[in-house]
Amino acid sequence: MSNGSRAVRVVIADDHPMYRYGLAAALDSSGDVEVVAEAANGDDLLAAVDRTAPDVVVTDLAMPGLDGTAATRALLARHPALGVLVLTMHEGDQALFGALRSGARGYLLKDTDSAEIVRAVLTVAAGDAVYGGAVARRIVDFFTGAHRDYAAKVFPGLTEREREVLDLVALGCGNHQIAGRLFLSEKTVRNHVSSILYKLQVSDRAAAVARARDAGMGDGGRAPKEGGTTGVDG
Image 1 (cartoon, rainbow, N blue to C red):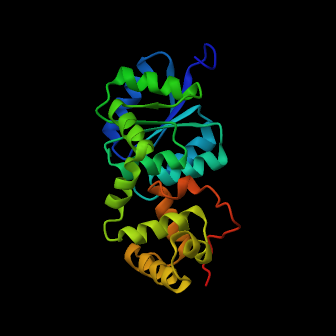
Image 2 (image 1 turned 90 degrees about the vertical axis):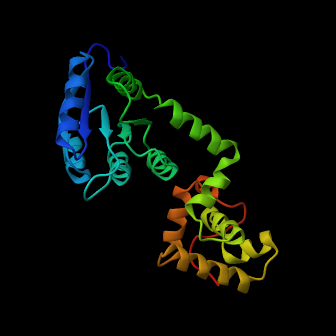
């Protein structure tokens, strides 16, 4: 193990008590892992991690209150070296990429056998990343071009042109830059942005950017070459 002979300290978060019980028993019985706390929701998870300083968190995504994705983001802001392994029933792309963008280093489905979960915990504790087979294939597909199809599925109400505009908004481009890149007038770009905000049911450009980046748009938030802004302009 990465921390010598000491057992890897783990906090489990899941809103189903019986599942937590079974998972804790499986991890503890391995001899390599010690479950130091359990939590039923994201808020309790934050408190448990602050209290126990574990090496790894194993968390579900769908929990009452603060969900697993938001909790992961908050945890890593407080504890950057913490390893987070997502263990969930959610196999959809939106859940997967939302969790990865929040900083999770592992993603397994709940039908994974206990021995593989133990290996994943040890892998994450060592600073490496681990994904189940189906999840790994989805990640490869995403980075080999299938992300365009994914964005279309996530935002089916947007036209192809609106997705192009949203991608550039997520990249950090202002309306003037978007107009230049897409050979549109700034008025047309403003109209597209207004339509995007309405269709996504978000109140401002920043919220649209957050939604788009969770969907893998905007090259993960890479800054534009020119001096653009994500603020509302024009």
